[in-house]
Each structure stands twice: as structure tokens, then as C-alpha cells.
Length: 320
Image (tube, rainbow, N blue to C red; front, top):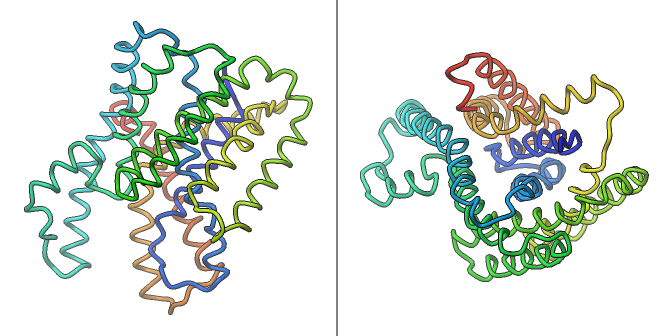
């Protein structure tokens, strides 16, 4: 089944993730507020992946599924690991002290680069997504009836709790991703046979999602961020899953944003890094909401233009 609303949501999530990597630490209160929901989009990306995993329903399909996901995720992971390793060396030499970071000489760095996305701040997502999808697919194959949807939502919440309790890199990244993936899968099962009935309530569901996001921002400092993300991700997923666009133009835009979302995720740090250097050199801190939003939009625009160009090249398309 094609979910045009989920395609649109993937594009929105990619835009939000660009805002996570703006290197502008000194900001006004308004400058901080405009990116308050950006980290949420990382979990949302994982939840969308889980939402769309409903086709894996028997353990014997696991090997084929694992090969398919590896074929999709590993080529861009390897290619962009090399790109970011080279670009980091260039930045180190030209902008950050004139020499290569000493971490390049440690075995721990290269082990992390190969298995955990250590060559860049965002590539962890691809390897952890692959690990989480293969692990989850096995579990989903054991209990795959629609009636178990609510069970998987709560399992996702339990995994989230465990990740926060770990209080280390593994809890923050792979375990958190697994929690959102499982939660998204649960909501996908719950929505699977109810979409037609829910579509008539789409304005109400969208209003609930917006209200949940507003609440997410308002209770900062009261509830930990990852818990807030988990509480909000369900209403957002359902609200967009039931969207049914009648305009073919809007459907095309949604499809385009969904198709380029992974590419935008992969390339955007190149643009945020360059733009942040330029902003820091030209504009004094603290940075206002206008400055933050301007860099955010320009980085996203540069990313989506670059991805659109790369997708036109047959050999390169598979890497974005």
C-alpha cells in the first residue's frame, strides 16, 4: 500500500533532521526554540521505518528480508562513510588546526567507523537501522497479528525506558532507534485495517498531532526528551498515514519528498558544516531565530538540489 501522507512525513522529518546539525551553539532563546523539535525527527524516521515493515510476517522470510535491507542500506553507508572521512580530513587541514585528528590513528575509531557509523555524526542511523530491522523482523514474525499492535507499542516504550536507563552511547542511539522502530510497527498494525474509517477524521487527527507537538515543546525540562518523542510519535504517524491527497500535484510533491528524504539525510552535514563556518565568520553570536532558520532552510535546499541531481545519475542513484 502506498501512503502519500507517510511520504510527505518522511520529507518533513528529513527537513527537521537538517536542523539537528546546525553548528551554531550560541543562540538567543528564540534561536533555540525554532529547533526544539528537530531531535524528535530522528525517532520519527525510525518509527516510519517500523510502520512500513508490516510485510515481514513469517520467520522463514527473514533471510530474504535481511538481504534486501542490506542491499538498500549498506551501499550508501559505505559510500558516504568514505565521503565523510575524506571531507573531515579536508576540514581538519583547512579549517580546524591544519592537521588530521589523532583519532584516525586509533583502532577504536576504525571499528566504530565500520560497524557503528563513526565517520560522521549521523551515519550511525544506517547501520543501527539495519541491525534493528533484522532483529525486529525475527520478533515480528513470531507475533504478527493485528491484535498485537498495541503490544508492540508498549514493547517499544519498554525498550525506550531501557535505553534511557543505560545512559550510554548504545542506549542513546541503537536502543533508542530500536524502540521507535518497534513502536512504529505497532502503530502500523493498529492502523492497517482502520485507515479507511480513520480518513474521515483526518482533520481531527491532524489537530491532535499538532497539539501533541506543542505539548512536547511545553513540557521540556519536565519529562526527558526521548520519552516526549515516544509519546508524540504515534499521533503524528497516524495523522499523516490517513491523509488522502486528491490533488495529483500534491501527491507528486509528497512522493518526491519521500524519495529524496534518505538522500537529504545523508548529504546535509556537508551543507550545514560549510554554512555554519560562513555564519560564524560573518555574523556575531548569539544567533537569532532568523539566522538559525535561514541557515537551516539553505542547508536543506542545497541538500535536496544535490540529491535531485545525484538521483539523475544512474550509477549514483543507488547511493542516495
